[in-house]
Image 1 (cartoon, one colour):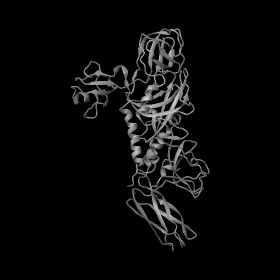
Image 2: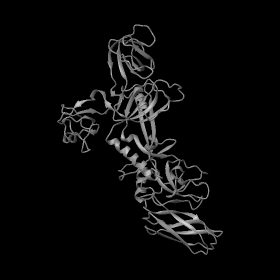
Image 3: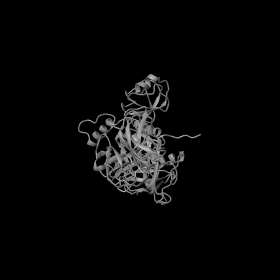
Image 4: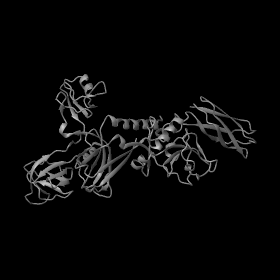
Length: 501
């Protein structure tokens, strides 16, 4: 049995993931302040529960991903003179692995509709933005290009990387004052010709032709027409004189010219036509996520330690509101997300009032509140809604002693140990994590806190705090282990992740 997962399936999955941002909360997480066994070679993350559990143990900060922080993307193929590019072919068995589209130094994106006999030497930017038709440089190198779009300036800054280009499908007319790039792309989309034939492939050149044979195109579209060029008795080139419209299939009859055995087949464009949907045409089943961590995010997260792990977490739960009764006064905030923990005596109507869209609420469902309260005895948990969270545990101690980052501290009474992520000397708060290196002992307010391995009395512990996010409460969607990235007071880190679907 032979089967494939199509690009359409991958793109559909990508689209659904992007759409899910409206109905869920996604956070970018930072973690692993302590070194790997070999700190130049990060551990390999695996798709198992152990990887997710240890991620939570090592996490110390997270920041919410906004819908404007994520976009479709495709591999970046820079146009370089002297490079051979491949023409788009609807029958190519592996078109996605080939160089059939390019981006120029001016961030214009073009698709190759017809390749020349050798390398490309004429930059498509010579003609540049052309929102209808094709770019044909009068046969200078034989290449015919289709202008697709220009990457908008804001997308260049936020999403363009050395390996990927951001792509969009514009759903409505750009409003007045929009970037010219968006206006031009929308024009390309509206000018796209569905079922046009811009190129034909010579499958058999034939022999004995003394003049150009007649090409008759038969299919379910209309008006496509082409002429052949012969040399040395063989068909050497095809020129489209009318690209036609509406074709999903077609055949070409080659007659006349005194020769024989010439065979040609048409290349039919993607649904909607070239440029109607760049995310489809460029196989954009990747997303780029851009999240910027600015210092301590207004006193919210640690900024004096390095990180070696990045993660994408879906719908983590706030620790302080992990179980509220639906009927409690003010138990919900309009616009916030909640997760159903128990149904109790609640009815479907209660959950629908609260914002459920499923029509049949079930335990585990996430919904967005459209009312502050509802009757019933079901319980809910509030999904994280703040811009950023410190996910560390805390110890409040008497001030006066410094605890450096990455120092392991211990409680003199319980023997519990933790790794210092950051110490707030002004307020006497140690932000710490516990992992397999430290063990998972429980500190108490009866502990004195000292550096591990010392015999000093230590600092009096007055309070033990839990993380602001309930660990293991959200779904870990992505993990990346890397070498250390150092954070410093006031430093800005822009994290770009590319995820393939």
